[in-house]
Length: 209
Image (cartoon, rainbow, N blue to C red; front, side, top):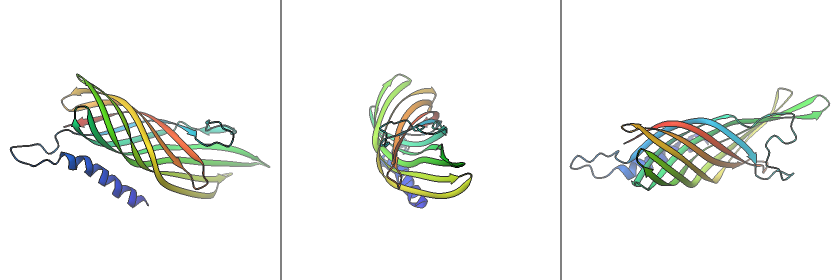
């Protein structure tokens, strides 16, 4: 499954590059209008189908971590200054909860969402500042691991298609070098039918050709 995801990621990277691969004649730059970037930040995990109706990831627990570190890597191509396409690989990080099951038994569940996606990009350039909004589809995988009193109990993994959304702002600081501040929402479902989403708030750097 991991090889399949990375193969798909390479295909997504190749898609923007393919758009950029214009006929190489007259000194045309095949990387013109492409960009690459890497972001790191923190995620905010929440439920989408909690039995209690609450979206709070930590509800009913005595200890939890719903703001783990996350990252994303992007490669994009702009057809016009206002319209483009972007491939992304992402990880929202490892969130976890601890539940007191009674009788001295403590259950620790770890959940993580990662995947790859392809989005359409709408941009509003204002001098060196570019605002953008993104929407697309991803191959999203949710990993869940259960430990009881530190003893491994089981692991599951489920991959499925999910929508992805995002928005952000980038600022050119020198030539093609830019910094960006982004929000991205990713989703996933476990093999047990639990549905989660994570809002990744990140900052990063990139290069625009």
